Image 1 (cartoon, rainbow, N blue to C red):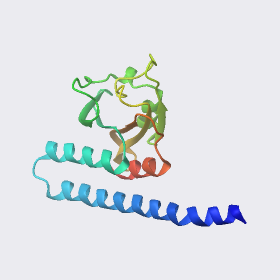
Image 2: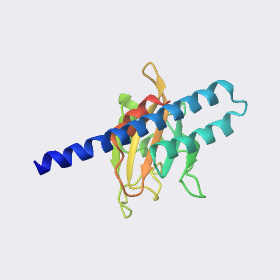
Image 3: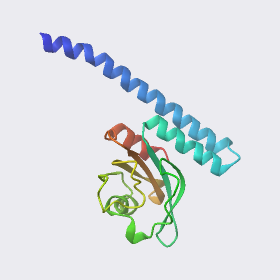
Image 4: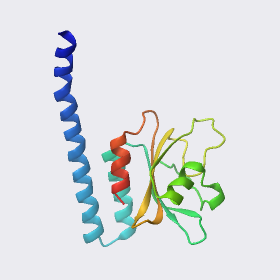
Length: 166
């Protein structure tokens, strides 16, 4: 009986939390649409969108990486990467998770501890847990969205949302 009472007490709280997450995500999608359709300064709009995504998805690191014709990645907009931004990342330095995102057009997760020497340039030291999503449409991958957190794991909802955002 006690377990049932506890479950009944937590179910509305979980539903409320889920509804709040859905509301934040819907608001963010609307604002992103507004930037895309009404904005007049593309770089400023992209920078603002990155900040909004980080806030809505509660991530410490957000990076929008563009795939160059030769296969290298170039950072277009970021939050949480620090004062020194990474240079263009050659294709052979993407790392397994990001290479899979770009090759197979699917979301991936990656984890790099602070002392991990395999940490690729797209994964700044501010984050430990990363969610990666392709940017593009109709199986045409144009780049990747990188979301990172310092301590807590990215939720499945954030990963799904990230995959629908670009």
